[in-house]
Length: 209
Ligand SMILES: Cc1cc2nc3c(=O)[nH]c(=O)nc-3n(C[C@H](O)[C@H](O)[C@H](O)COP(=O)(O)O)c2cc1C
Image 1 (tube, protein in one colour):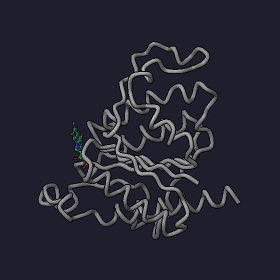
Image 2 (tube, helix red, strand yellow; image 1 turned 90 degrees about the vertical axis):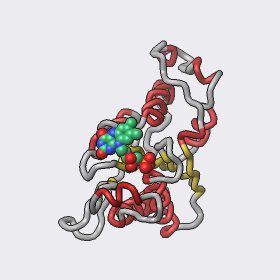
Image 3 (cartoon, rainbow, N blue to C red; image 1 turned 180 degrees about the vertical axis):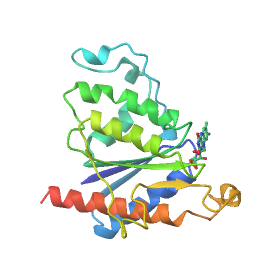
């Protein structure tokens, strides 16, 4: 079973990457036989949707796909049993790179819901302590509109531990804002991401049994 994890920041080795790596460890803790694909969204040249609506008409293809790299990412995504996306908080929403991917996923919906029943889990990274919820809700809306199955977390104490994987650079004070990415991490967000990866793997095994 293929699991695709997308680092949705244009920055490759920062917070979103950390969350995705933790989720991968969580997946591996359940079973080492998953076919895990980690994608850096910024490695793909994807043109923004221009609203031509050609995907509404059979054969529901996007003309932009002839001149960019959406097909490369599409191949991986459409073969996946589960998809996890970690996106940074840019003004309360996902990064433009992830928004472009979401908009360009419209043909997959128009071809009769190619992502139907694929498991989906959202993760977010944010500068300030609060504010990642908008990112999580953008990702959840994408998954709901595509007919996917959204996975929530059930981690430890429901009072003491969070269940939405949002990392913040402002964990202690602005010192961390500078130092994260240089070896310091938000441990709780990492733990939640690990558990979310675990949950995705457990559910995949359950559904496919
Ligand atoms: C264009 C832009 C807009 C941002 N807007 C916000 C914001 O509204 N609130 C916030 O807390 N952080 C904001 N940030 C900070 C990022 O969310 C934060 O640096 C995040 O950790 C980036 O993820 P990364 O480390 O994986 O690149 C913004 C960053 C950029 C570049």
